[in-house]
Image (cartoon, rainbow, N blue to C red; front, top):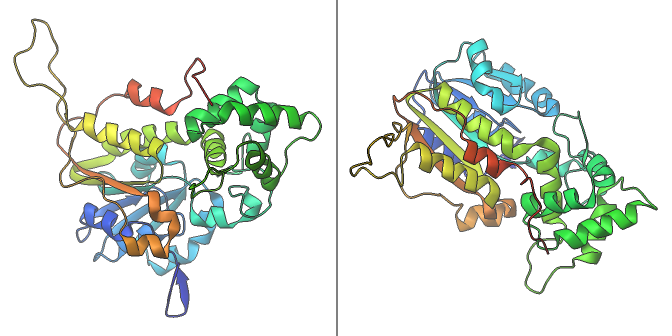
Length: 338
């Protein structure tokens, strides 16, 4: 956060860099797919006469943004929606085709700072983690899932080496005391998988990340959203994505690489071998872009952020990429865990 004219405003991680990658033009139509506290939207509105469509699946974020909608005087439309639906929402609101789309993937600072939402282990709160406040909560998963499923979630969505050990401890402990609070779970993880010398994060960080991703189906949503942006962008339109952990970044990196035709061979093909599809994005510059030392010092949450971006070509959008969907889901069979 920063204070300007007595008002506290959210400063998005890599915000200036992401908006610069979009290169906003006067009177352009832009979509902030993850409104949060409105940081990217404010930056987009700085360009003369731009129109911004902002989405957030969290109804609290949408309610908190009403003042900015009013201040924008008709240039901002704010909608509660999952970003996987961005192309249909943009069509309904008269924003197609788009000149730019920006994503800030993951949980927002506001959600982390609200103990009652259950996203953070820094303060005690209900073990919830639902962005929309609907569906299965983290407590439901922790208390009901089989040990094998819990281990898969922790290992694949949290990259937690001690996934099997933590899952076994959860199942043992919930028999006598079902999990209901963030600190209850964080203390168990800290007890059975304590931090190693030199670790810079809390032992429960990866477990909480994994559960949040599972509760909100975040990685599948990301895959669908990237392809929705591909459908919604005009030729020359820009897509910028800021990620905060390796699972998200891997999906975004592979999406841009595949869509830009990287790794394709242009030598003679075998008889009957299909030619590669036309590239739907061009990717330029040194990527990913990382935060500088000052931004990390000002906001430690920025330390793992990465920005990737590309420009839409005139090629038609492609079908759903099954490889990316597989990256976003739990494997059908368990893999080796710690």
